[in-house]
Image 1 (tube, rainbow, N blue to C red):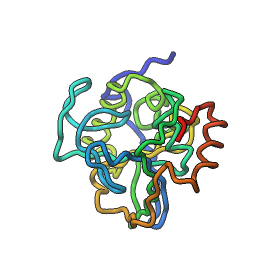
Image 2 (tube, rainbow, N blue to C red; image 1 turned 90 degrees about the vertical axis):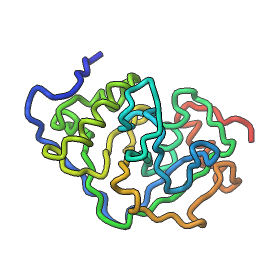
Image 3 (tube, rainbow, N blue to C red; image 1 turned 30 degrees about the vertical axis):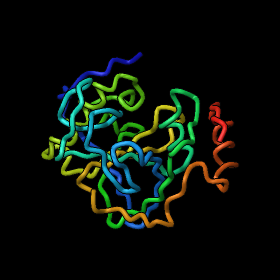
Image 4 (cartoon, rainbow, N blue to C red; image 1 turned 60 degrees about the vertical axis):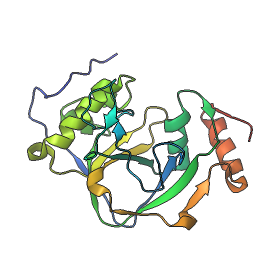
Length: 209
């Protein structure tokens, strides 16, 4: 397994950026029973997930009022593998699917392909199970505006099927729209066939509804 060094990088980064255009739609899977989540809310409690940038170092967690994170994907399959890929069991439960629409162009640090190397790390930072390392890099990307600018977030290949995944910092907190009609319970019968198809293709199991 490739070694993932902690920042700062040994060589001067030459970061690549991806512009997420205004009007782009993404999918977000969230549980409204946790952290008061809504379709467009940013989670300030952390760090918990891969690129959380809250300042309390893992494994300790706290509520960082100044730093929030929102994860999304281009597809429902990208959401499901990120949330349930480790356990292999899709727990439909109270989860909801939201369609988010960007209301302005968002500038993202691109960690796909050679992007991670050019950002100063390696692609394995997007796949490794050691969240402490990836969270440290996220804080470094966020804090070093003279290198990376005031980026709105990150785009990376997820660890399970390499689909595009997104981590948005609170800098974009007002830059997504999500109407009530854009939210659907994961247990909705209209989604059942799609969820079961994704589970089959991703070698996962759907807990009985």
